[in-house]
Length: 226
Figure 1 (tube, rainbow, N blue to C red):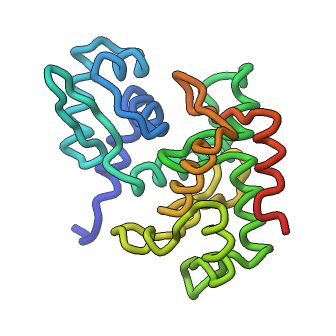
Figure 2: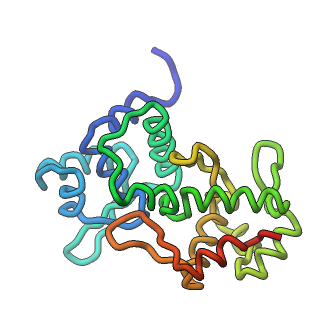
């Protein structure tokens, strides 16, 4: 028997269609109840409870109790990154569960990936941050440059405070629709928060879609452009 992480176990947990639906429905970063997740998975509440227990035992989900309700969410950003990577692999291999619908172009344009922005707009932003040398490669990682500290602070993002949390400030996340990297980590999450604070965009209820207003679209296109 070989030693090391048991990827077969994790693969089997994600590989079930109902459990895969549960995980992808939580990619918005929102916590959902068992009843809501049963609806998303297309199974009965009893069956959903069994799947949720397996995902909890496997370390892919966590549950929070509030009064009479139990809310489930992904166990962390690493789980979200793994699901996003599998979505990229499935997209590249041509394995789509449904035909593209009306929401598909919007999902590709801008969506939430757990707690940060993904899609075409996010890839554009990552490219601008790199080209303007606000972030830079540092060995195998990514760091915010001194110029980046200044420009991000002007935008209302305190990078120093992000350095105090137990989470990478910057990390890349492979975007399944663009096949390029977008920005994740604490900075990616804070940038999306700031975009919402400024009213440039909002989350579409019941979906992962991030929809920009016309003025927000223009402001975002010029963000860190020069």
